Amino acid sequence: MDYDVLILGGGILGCSVAYEMSKYNLNIALIEKDYDIVDDISFVNTSVVYDGSETSNELMSSLEKNGSKLIEEACSKFNVAYKKVGALRIVSDEKGIDDLINMYDRAKKRGIENVHLIESSDVYDIEPNIKYDVKKSLYSENVAIIAPYDLAIAYGEVAADNGVNFRFEEEVLDIQSISKGFKVTTNKNKFTCKAVINTIPNKKYMIDGEEIDRHEIMNNTTYLVVDGDDGNYLNKVIINTIDEDKFVLNIPNLSNGYIIGIKSSHQLTVEEGIKYANKVFPEVKRNNISNIFNEECNKNLMYIDDSKIDMGYISITGTHYGKTTIAPAIAKTMSYTIANNMKATYKKNFVDKRREVYRFREMNKSQRNEIISLDKRYGNIVCICNQVSEGEIVDCIRRPLGARTIEGIKRRTGAGLGSCYGSYCDRKILNILAREMNKRPSDIVEDSKNSQLWPSRIKEFKGV
Image 1: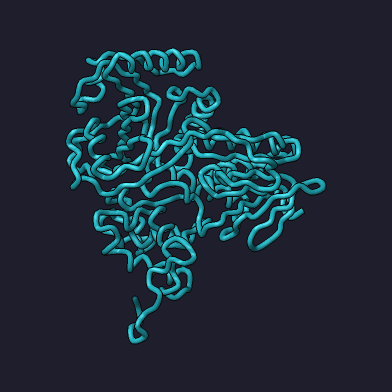
Image 2 (image 1 turned 30 degrees about the vertical axis):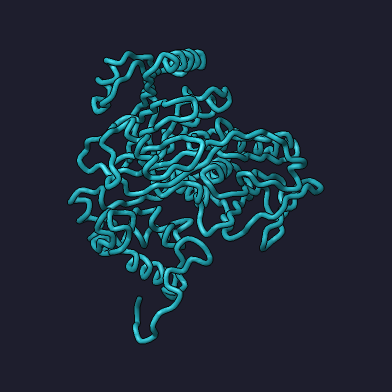
């Protein structure tokens, strides 16, 4: 056997599984088709951590409840941004009040604490920046916001430090059952293994058998990223239900400003998005919006197929609005089951610690002077907008699972994601990456094989 366990897919779920599996004495590899891990998380590095009170599905609620606890522990352990902000689900009509009461009763039956049904007067005390009529609200103190990309990278780095082999640029073509294991075929290799944990969403292989007609209901959510330098924005996660098919979601951004998501049956234009956004925050104008993106996910489910668990195969497919929240809970349960079936033992030398990350913009003057005295590159600011130094960029390239693309550097450090959108620092980032990887600048890519920023250069010039 080439490996004991193969993990397919390097998204937030795959990295969570790699972290949990790396605690056992097993030979493990993760296969990812792209240049980097965690391509399933947007550039806006802020995500909601739910507590299980909002969903009608019992399994998803249980996974969210467990996942939120695991995430809080991991963020503290790995120094990942985490902020408990609370969430207000507000309504303005009688039907909405009935729905809130049902949701509140469900939360109590599930044993979810710190969830309250509150009157309109209390809503304005909790969130004074709400400027429209509210009849009633469900308030959860448990809801938090985190940097999901940083968390996934942390899981991946710890897994790599504990022996997981990450194989990039390999696309899984098929999985077949063989005697005492599986054969996994990629575009580059053929592997045998004793167990497979498949986290690639919505991909069917031979081992999966006949496709099940699940009658999936998909939601489309349009997100507007709104600048908020004046601090006059909503500090809580706000969910304003418009009708049965639409709601508006306000998410405070970890850096500054906020994100407004509008769930609807179709992808919205900027103008449509602003119209619905104004139902939560009337001050939103077109010139406040710095970005817009869309996300499609299943209405309420992810599909965990453990029907072949005795053979050593688990498939987790589909998408879910709370995938960041539920990923650690799924990973812990699935990994324990696989390891238990294989009679694997815990590693005595498992290192449950991430290598230190230094963020120049978060340091005080004394800390900055100290790190510059150790490495002068931390004194060279490459991205002025987000105060990212050359030292941070070099570190993110040299770390376990280091960045190999411009996008990888931007996601890890925030360089190039400021108000100038990289116009000042993209060239500098490219040259640093080329130098560290011993490549020509024209060989450096944005995010994938065929995405060179500069296809060629004028030979008379030494640099880009």
